[in-house]
Amino acid sequence: MDLLSYDLVDHLVQFLSRKDLETVRKVACGRHELSNWQLLAEHHLRERYLLGIKIYIPYQDEIESAPKRMKLEEGDDTDDKNEEIEVSVEKRLFTEELVGPWDFKKLQYASLRDVSISWYHLDDNKNYRPFEMQQLLSILSLPVATRADSIKSSSLSVNGSACRFAHLVLELIQVLQKTFMKVDIFTTLNDMNLRMEDFMRDYINQEAFLGNLSFSCDTIRNQRISLEGIVTLFKKRRLTPLTVRIPVDSLSHPKIQEIVEHWKNSDGYVAGHKELRMVRDPWMGFESRTQHDYLPHPTKRSSLLQSSNYLKIVKFKPWTVKDWNLNLLFGAE
Image (cartoon, rainbow, N blue to C red; front, side, top):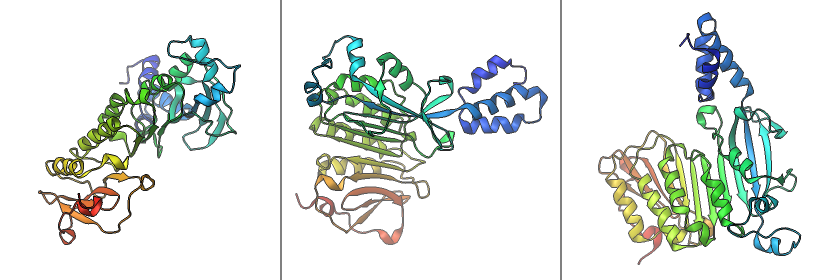
């Protein structure tokens, strides 16, 4: 370790989280043979920063009302695409201090903190500017900051309900790393729905990073897809909390029973107060009830708490066990 050259150490530390860099700095401190490690660990801790990116893709009516702007169709030239996409990029320190608009310098020290893609300007006060597609894709391929980087949250938000160009939205999200802690997807576009299955499956496979997953759509197919991913979550042991929000129409007696059966066939562990919640959004239209029931796991390691708008894995407590009743949540069939 102490025989590695400065350039090689510089290359290696690029792959370390801030937590690992802190460890390297402490171990190498005062040791001459590890001076390169100490120097470069301190350098990266000092130079690294976070990016918050807001991407604006116009909706149909806006384009039709602005004849001077090029209308895009699938297969149009890249130069035309560039006229439609506007981006705001802000730089933030790991102390959460906002520096201001990004100056596009020292890209090698940047990590993504928040990415938002929408058909409307998310903040009129932001400095939106046209971006070249390849430049934007390059920025979006940067690593995503994680808990090991000492940040509380990272988020991806996609609102494609009125975007004119679903293929552009999909192209953007496909280059992003699947390691955001909070993911919020809302779409009513058939073009996006056709390719959302792989995207959601990738996030489920990387679910160790997730703390909150929200998926809303208007198609039966995507409701089935989102449920399939949730079922797999109930099979696994989690070490961090996770909340999953899905459309209310996705839940029925047979589907909930399928989730229950998969959970019963799991090892039943719940790590302390960590939990997995599946939440039905209140605004999506169901009658509120205040009752709740507990279903004990066969191993007695945990229970499945059922209430009016959620299923939640909790630590087993013998005095909470009652009759399991799906009608409490959905009413009689």
